[in-house]
Length: 112
Image (tube, rainbow, N blue to C red):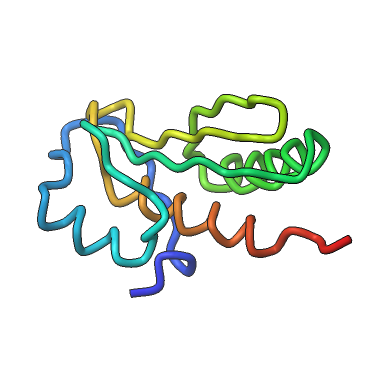
């Protein structure tokens, strides 16, 4: 299952959060991400602030296209990112799809 080829499906609630087994199954495709509580987390490090912001611009475009938006915090050249489906208060398949797409954005970073 290539999560990068899938699309996020709008979630207005009423669906259950992913269970531990489903999280493990999807997690295989996004091994750099970790589950803490009901969130999927990852930290990214860049050479400088400009690279971190360029990465976030790519993430913003993906998030808008998918209609699913991460929370993030920038610490100069470091970006901490969190994903979860607010409507259900936990993880959904959408979170793993977006995580895989964000991983693709980091791989697509222009080389100097």
